Amino acid sequence: MKHNSDIIIVGAGLVGMTAALACAHKGASVILLDGQDPAAHLDADFDGRASAIAASSYQMYRHLGIADRLGEHVCPITDILIADGEVGGYISPLTLHFDSRDAGDAPMGYMVENRRLRRALFEAVTAAPNIQMRAPVRVMGFEETPASMDVQLQDETLRASALIAADGRNSFCRKTAGIDVSEIPYKQKAIVTTVVHEKPHKGVAHELFLPGGPFAILPLTENRSSIVWTDKPGAVDAAMALPEPMFAAELARRFGDMYGEVGPCAPRQAYPLSLQMAETYIKGRLALIGDAAHAIHPIAGQGLNMGLRDAAALADVIAAARGTGLDLGMNLDDLQVWRNFDNRVLAASTDIFNRLFSNNIAPVKHARRLGLGLMDKIAPAQSFFIKEAAGLHGELPSLLR
Ligand SMILES: Cc1cc2nc3c(=O)[nH]c(=O)nc-3n(C[C@H](O)[C@H](O)[C@H](O)COP(=O)(O)OP(=O)(O)OC[C@H]3O[C@@H](n4cnc5c(N)ncnc54)[C@H](O)[C@@H]3O)c2cc1C
Image (cartoon, rainbow, N blue to C red; front, side, top):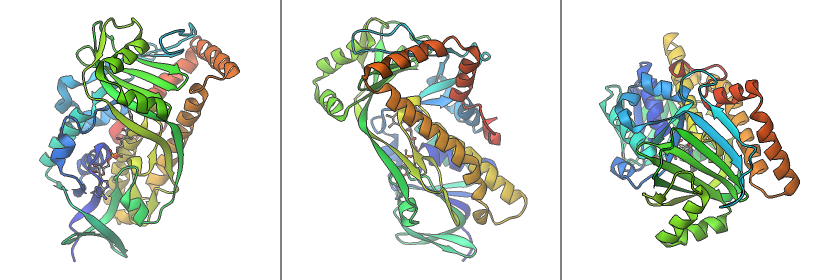
């Protein structure tokens, strides 16, 4: 049986579609499979989240033509303001302000609604000559042979050199390959919605640390902001059950008078939160990327960015193998070497950050407020964090440069 493509990607989420485009950009032929009908994924209510795309990840979207497709729908993040406080009450004066102008002129990142990004990626994937998308399909299993990876669908078998699992937190491919995952559930859930406000946000992203968890206000186009309200599960369930006017009043209490009148303009959605790390990303001809490999707390808006860096690194690893005529399915180990350390450091720091800030223990509270105030005065530390938020540290894959 002859190979149907160089690689097969299972999972056409944001990471799977980006990986398909990145690998195709480097000359690989790709079959992209998803279990769901694309029409369901493209429905405006499927995913109400918006993502903070780091400057380096956005550079890849420029190379892949996605930035052009997104057009006016992205909002640059110029400032990040971090503060510690109480709901509707005291906000510590010791805030931390990151200003992108302190580290050059470029924004630290760009906010884009997932529904817009999903559509732009889908249109690019379906237009790419060396990507074949098949959805909805049911992947029944896969088998590694000495020269290929064979993927069984309901009524046919597809053959490629490598199988890439981008099938999310509950990855079927990871489970089928017997790769263990360590998981720490957070005693938190997140509510996501979009609000419209009277005054402009001027590109500022706010992270307000409240005792139940962080409350993020992230700038979108047209005087709108995306909200990620993290809290204890009971509080989230109660807020999700509130009638619209009461929910709107709860949101307004968290905003104070910062943006004038504020009101929700999209449905609310709730997400359970946990930290998950696969014990390895590579097993033979199988590689895990995105949430299938690592899923983290949304506190720093880095989960998707980690997956996008996996996709860019995968494209380089595949291009290197193709360039030297090697069997690319047997040369995936560099992906593990390249991405494992970065992903683990980021996962650990978001975990520590969330634990440190999501509590009301008085000495911890005073120490962190002092810490924020101190950090605000140390220019080199600021510049380090601005570069970290922009995803500009470490050895960057070619598409991120
Ligand atoms: C509240 C919240 C806010 C967030 N905000 C940010 C942010 O601002 N910035 C950021 O970088 N990250 C953010 N993240 C994280 C980010 O959303 C995820 O990391 C990212 O969406 C993961 O994408 P993925 O493609 O890896 O997985 P998924 O989006 O889960 O996609 C998996 C795909 O695989 C398909 N699939 C699953 N099983 C199968 C199967 N057996 N066969 C075929 N197909 C299958 C699914 O249909 C789906 O299309 C946030 C997360 C949350 C919860």
